[in-house]
Length: 318
Image (cartoon, rainbow, N blue to C red; front, top):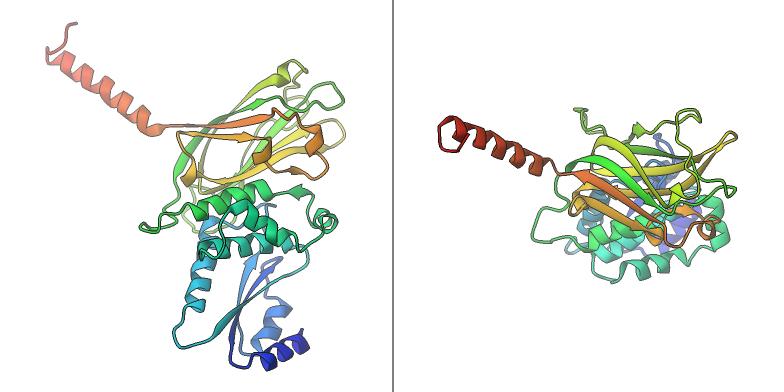
């Protein structure tokens, strides 16, 4: 790495470099130590958020603004270097796509993401991660492309009450049925800290004795109550539970600020599944994540309260 950087600086002597390194763990990396010796500013980011090769929206925003600021310095020739440690290519491809979309150098989220994924053979991707996380990555790229430049982006994380999840046409395991378990990870809205890490917020019954086993006919429509408050970046997992092991059915990452009309509807193409499991999923599979509208509940209560007061004042019939 030292010889490579020395050669790079010799070839482009007029450039100043800033480096973004996507790493594992929380400790300072050897890459950062090496590059700092060559007067390069090094920023380090994680490789994932609760297993997804996507970073929280606020972290993405920091990366995009820092990159744009560095590349826009007047009277100075600046360049960016992006580096990932082992296993970090999926998040590196995602962040590259986010940057060029943010700067309007490319258009079309899926086409842009595919351009960077083509640099790595599909066989290697399967070794790096068991999941095809491109559906969730595309969702976040759409958040970036659809931003309103005239407003504060991203806005404050919206606090929502996740009521239930409705699953249609669950896959059958051994033709016997399915025993789904839902897990939700995200930021603890009750915490006063600004830690960008995640925690397990909810899990449905996770033992065979507690989790309901749905027969094949029942797998056509399954409703699982959740009743969990969520905010910001959320990872939702659906797991098949049997007496031997757990098997992931699908995973999805989303941000509550971009949920519209209190529902997040997801087709098979919009959820992350294992690379080898897509053909086992019914093509008409759907997941519907439903939220409660607390504002509507407030106005309903206010109206009832107002009617009660009017009745007491003799304005309404008994």
